[in-house]
Amino acid sequence: MKAVQYRQIGKGPEVVEIDIPEPGPGQIRLKVTAAGLCHSDWFLMDLPEEQYSYGLPLTLGHEGAGIVDKLGDGVSGVDVGGAYAVYGPWGCGLCHACAQGAENYCPNAADLGIAPPGLGAPGAMAEYMIVDDPRHLVPLGDLDPVEFVSLTDAGLTPYHAIRAAQHKLYPGATAVVIGAGGLGHVGIQILRAISAARVIAVDLNDDKLALASEVGAHETLVSGPDTAARIRELTGGRGAEAVFDFVGAQPTLDMSREVVAIDGYIHIVGIGGGVLPTGFFSTPFGAAVRAPYWGTRSELQEVFDLARVGEVSVHVERYGIDDAVSAYQRLHEGTVRGRAVVVPS
Image (tube, rainbow, N blue to C red):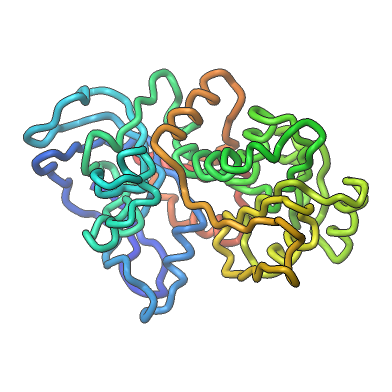
C-alpha cells in the first residue's frame, strides 16, 4: 500500500510503498478514507536528531477516518464496514484520567510506550491503518470523512481549550483568537456556537483574516506593533477575558500578555516555541496561563454533534496521496487556507 512517511532526519515526508498491516489481538484495521495534515507533523520533522524520539520510519497522520476493514481477535462493539473517526491521544485506558475519557492527559502513556497515531505509532496517512482499541473509534454517522476528519484535532483541540475557559465567555466578554489558520478558523466557530463573547481574530495573513470573518469573527486585525493597543481600545481598555493563541511563538505570546484582562485566561495552543513568564510582575492580577493539550473522547463526540447541526465546519483543501508531499510543502509555507486533507484512494 501507499503511505506518507518521515524516513530520514531533515528530509521531510515521502510517499512510499509498504506492506498492508495486519491487526493483532484487540486491534482494528481501517481502510483510510481521509487523513488530515497538521503543523505538528512539521514540528516533529523539523526536530534535530538529538531531540527526535518518534521512531523511523514513521507513517504520518494523527487526524484519521476510515471504514473498518478487519478485526483482530477479541474485538467487539465495532462494526465491519462501519465509518469511524480516530480519537488520537491514546492512553493506558486504566488510570484516573483515562477513566474520564481524558486520555490526552494520561500520565502512564509515555512510560508504557503508548504513542498517538502519526506521532509515534503508525498514522493515518496511508491506505490502511491499525487502531489499537475500539474505544479510540468514534462513529462518523452521516458526516463526510473528508470534510470533517480534521475535527479530530483541529476541532477537538480548540474545543477543549475553549470549554476550559467557557465561564469567562459571558455576554459582554471578549475572546481573542491569535492565528486564524487550521485550528483558529474552527476555534472561531466554536466560540460563536457555545458562547456569547465577542470574537477578535488576529493574523498576519489577509486571506486567513478573510476566512476568519467568513466563519464569524466580529473583528479582524492584522498583527503588528499596534495590535495590542487596538484590542485594548476595542475593549474599552479592559482587555480580553480569554486569549487563545493558536501560534505559540514568542511575539504572539507577548501580545497575549499585553491584551489579557485582569483575572483573564491565556490558553497557549500553538507549538511555536515561545515561553510566557507569569507572576505579579509579568501578567495581570489573577490571570491564568495554561497549555491545554488535544481533548477528551467525550469532547470529540460533542464536536461532531456541533458539526451535525451545522455549527462547525472545516475549510478543506483535498489532495490525493501522491500529492501529499506538495500539500505538506504548502502547509510549511503557510499557504493552506483552512485544513489540508489527503484522500488515499
